[in-house]
Amino acid sequence: MLSVIIPSYNEEENIENTAGVVTRILDENSIDFEIVFVNDGSKDKTWEKMRELSMKDKRIVSVNFSRNFGKESAIFAGLRASCGDCAVIMDCDLQHPPETIIKMYDIWKSGQADVVEGVKTYRGKESAVYGGFSKLFYKLIKKASGLDMTGASDFRLLDRKVVDALNEMPERLTFFRALSSWVGFKTEKVYFEVADRYSGKSKWSFKSLVRYAVSSITSFTSAPMQIVTACGAILFVMSLVLGANTLYNYIAGNAREGFTTVIMLLLLTSSIIMFSLGIIGYYLSKIYEEIKRRPRYIVMDVLNKKTEKGKNKDD
Image 1 (cartoon, helix red, strand yellow):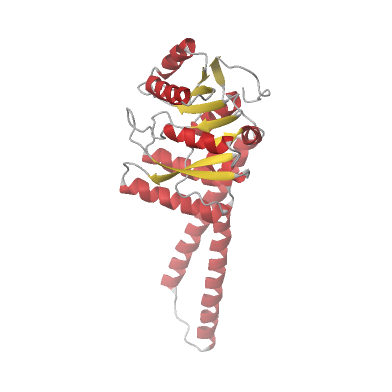
Image 2: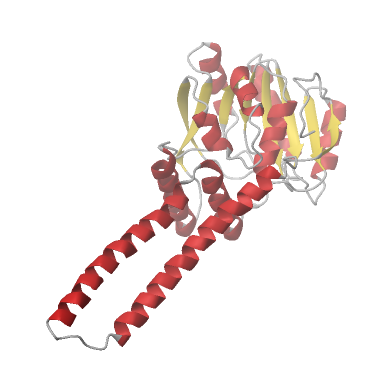
């Protein structure tokens, strides 16, 4: 059985159409399936729409959060609630083309791969700023972790053993795209073009994207901490050069008042120290959040959940 996991936030205009399109395509291809909708604390009628669909079709599972916990939490809640032999994660706005699910499923069923990753060949309509920011983000991830995530997305199929491996991870601050690659297993790629949204607008603002990028990088790699070390090394080299120059001028009797140099050095060192403290402080805050051991999410309602795959502390 195939589980289709669809995190949703304020998607009342898309829920019914997405469920209908996915159901039709999978029925036409004679695939046994379930759809797992996760309502991430929506403020519109998303949950009401999910509940209606679950009452009409027992193959539609609906999970309702007590508040907004973020897409990462919604994905992992869907993985926990899923019962299929494999699971696909896709967006509710149909920008991830449902037809591609069939290609992913066929590759998985043939035994070629345990993870089938959807890779974007066309990113759809987006601003130049957003596109440039995305490329920078993936370059940073590649340099920091060694994982090439160019064109990567959350749209991917996972075998049950991969789902179980992800569910066993105890960390609360997660980055699904990177973690699903980090766990290993046989991986194949399927290429797709991002479609236009069926309805509504993206819920991601530039500010929220920046916050998500920073959180994802710091939750998956400690590379930014090395910036502090690099800055210290650069300052050390500069101090050696300036120190040697100062001693030479003193011995040669050419010493002059270096007021401007001193001010510049103070400004440079002060800014680097504050920047470094900011990075260290951010990681400390992440450690603080982890050691509190609060759940990733709180589930308020679940409809049509079939079987327990293991009790989850997060539930």
